[in-house]
Amino acid sequence: MNPSTQDEIKGSFHEVKGKIKEKAGQVAKNPDLEAEGRAEKNAGKVGKKVGQIEKVFGQ
Image (cartoon, rainbow, N blue to C red; front, side, top):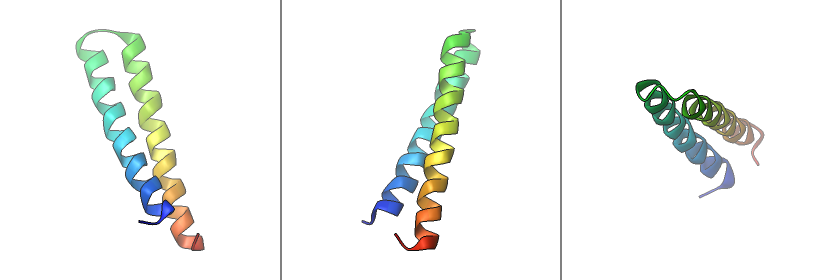
């Protein structure tokens, strides 16, 4: 599996994991967990985009 695909998969995983943490923080009324989830979700989106960009440029 090429690195760009791995980046996309890892990004998607972190995005989903972040969404779960964010919802858990909302349910538990824990703003720290909610913020951590939001940050991880955003980092996952960035990782996913990096993988997509690498595919476009053929790296």
